[in-house]
Image 1 (tube, helix red, strand yellow):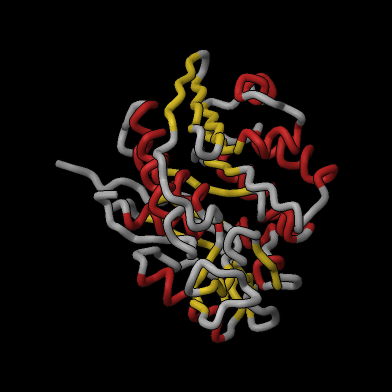
Image 2: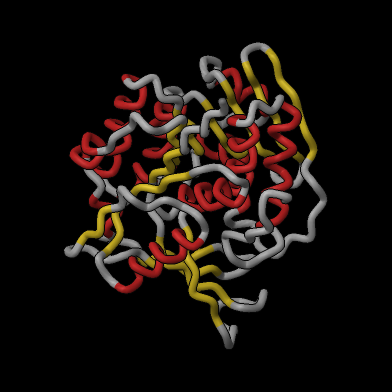
Length: 299
């Protein structure tokens, strides 16, 4: 008798995403697409596209943008059963300026009101993995406490935690973020971090230096843009080169990589296969101005 794999719980803020329909600049574009974007829900959507059951949790504003976020993620196969719709705070919004970063309008968003009570209310018994990122603790003191409590509860439940460092400079200063993100990474079972991101935060210039800093992490994946990615598991490590891709927009590719990697990990793939699966999924997202390009499990 076969058993259905336990779903992955992805937790963190999702916002409405406004992006130019073409690859031109935000200030000169004539047409725009209204989509959704959030690191953790991006992972959930990619996992669903790859045939994995995924559940997303956060707070959304009880408003039209919040319902649009909900409808869009549901249409991509993500289960939103535990989501809280907050009548007292709005859904955040952000704008992509292709090739020039993003603009956020998220101050006081519903997700910034995540709390330890929300972490305590989550039923973790049904999940096989929880995926978090370093964006959530930057939203507010309450959201940081939420992440701390959720990681503690996952540990008590023997539920593995995947953590993407995801440092966002507009949200908090490096001096505050560096020790906080390092502490969270050291509590996770699987950690994703960019080589340049780690250098900015912790002064580590090589993948090996990052491994020395996170020597107790069971599985550490260090991404190095269009060069490739290195996985450290115990004393072993392996490097897989990136897939040459014509890049339209880089934002969102890291989430796609994490989803591809995690799907292969949960399917029992080896280190090389996991990294390759991550690269394949990232390559799809690099070719679009949105955070998500659904090409199905064949991707």
